[in-house]
Length: 470
Image 1 (cartoon, rainbow, N blue to C red):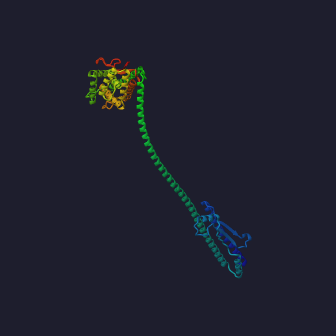
Image 2 (cartoon, rainbow, N blue to C red):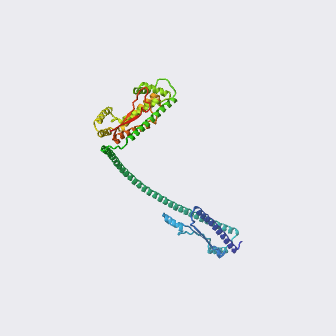
Image 3 (cartoon, rainbow, N blue to C red):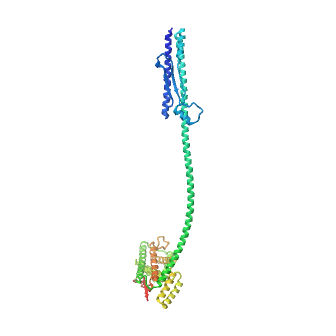
């Protein structure tokens, strides 16, 4: 049988071992919780305090474990700010203490054990029961600590969700306000755009009206200036342009005519050389062109022209082209009216009578007024251009010209430009001869051919200027 003193020491030894085991278990659980908080990004808010009375000696049986949890005591509170403040500051603490048997209880058990005599078997059973009870208390404490940790984690997660939700709601609110503001600005800009369009439409109408008025005023001003120039020139016989200058203008016109005619002759010779000889009936437009050319210049002359083209000598063809262009320019310069041939013939007869029976100044003024009123306009120029185009097309087709389409008698591309230049020169000579030369009566004549069998030798196809100075 174990002595009483030895049995008391044994119990104290077992109690101290149980307390050390429990403290190690609690410390390991708290360390794991703190590491988990650090990994998740949160500051550990739970403070563990372990107190022991081992400093007082082995005879003290009392030990205390204090656990402070940063949890709000009011479980029903839903205010996120209060939860956050309590979680961060740790104002509320719930101590959990585990203590071994007090010294008084140990003394009572010692006194009782002194009264009793127990064997080693009963002592071992009691120590085993006490150890099992201590382990059960430790497991319960660990479970409570785990529940507290889970509750703290859920609280922190709830606070995080609330904070994130408030930030998202704040961003959505700001975006909604900005969207409303942008919609208002867009609506205001649309209204401004409509007002600007209305103002622009009104200004365009006013501008169109002003342009029409300006055009009418410009036409009226031009008429007044023309009348003023005519009135001023009637009062004097001084020439604004010398007769020699008009003669030089006629020479330049003749050069332009000759250049265009030579270019057409070279084009005919080149196209005939490149085109293979074909036999068969010619197209209808070729027959019509031959008839027009023969009717105008005669069959003998047309046959001579074709023979020259065949032998690569376009002299007669060039002369015929110059003749056609000279007739056109002579009519532009000399005729009173290009719209009506009968009216022009009557006016020419009247002019002959006026020029014969009146003084030169009076006759000249009459011609200037009549020619200015009946001068060619844009429609007359277009009609003249179309007429000379048809005449040149017939002449080239009769000489052997074939368009690339084989069904058209269209002229080469350079002809319209040169023809427009020739007509512009003729109109300028007409205006100058009528308005700028008052001391002489100028007439532009085309040389007549002397013999149809030997046509247009030298300068016989050119326009010559004749004047009668009084």
